[in-house]
Length: 414
Ligand code: C5P
Image (cartoon, rainbow, N blue to C red; front, side, top):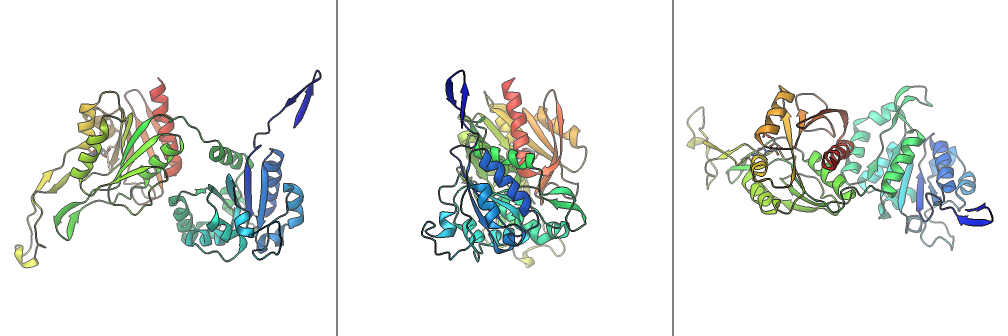
């Protein structure tokens, strides 16, 4: 766009100039809202390629999307169009961002399970750029465990999945499932396209997951930690520019992209892995649920039932090293964050841990509340520092991870 002032012509750069965005529209009523968003992206200077499923075309016409995006819409996997070499691949080739809006339950289910039976699901599988799912559907479909689990799978694989908004839906029900407000959508797009780099130059080490303490060759002591919080913290730090090392106990999560994962099993191994890297770190977060005790010695052979006394078996346990405390005592310049997973006296215990372990921040986590903590994708915490207690309500662990980093950075800036 050119603007003329006092005979001087200046180039005004559009916010999304040089950005190539593919928008995949699936078959939901909110398709008309996606059309509006396509128009917005195009007006902001983005090169927009629209892909529509057959269902989407029942709600809005490809002709409308052609007009709003300025480009021919991809509707057919087998189109004989010389300009689109292989439609589902050319549609995402070179894209900076792929937005699926509305992301229907069906489209997310396909994406979560690698099904590629139409042009949009095939494009999702072929895309190498960041993908943002914008769910919108009937509230019962949204809340269905299958949909929720599919969304969780997508998030775990590093895709961005927005929460649906609450309110009245076209089907007449009131609940969660509405297409998000455009301001939320704009924010999400800008966060992906222009990620903050406020952790650039920082070396970060995060511990995550449980540890496993061997009893004999087939048995161990462990806990319910899934590792999701630590992995979310690692992924968030990486996207904000940090150099991230993730010392992880045994979990089933995929390694976040660009993060150096050091796999460990026992607390002793975690201790060694962390201590040997501590010196060079700027920020360390102990999100792992480290087993406090281990068997005094590991039996070389499987302990037989008849080896035990009739009704009980004595197992001698010895204390594991407290990694966070060791780090607190050896601290030179590092900012040290610990977690306190408690079932009672949450804040008092967190404050005590802050002092005892010489940490700079404790993330206090009430694991007795249903729906948050160990098993779930959400968490509600209080950040406890020397001077402040910041309560954060229940939210997705990925969102919470960003808030924890915001709080750490605010402290580092002081
Ligand atoms: O004392 P407690 O186990 O409740 O403290 C929890 C915090 O201490 C967490 O940040 C956890 O990662 C860390 N911790 C540790 N080494 C241990 C036990 C806990 O680093 N052996």
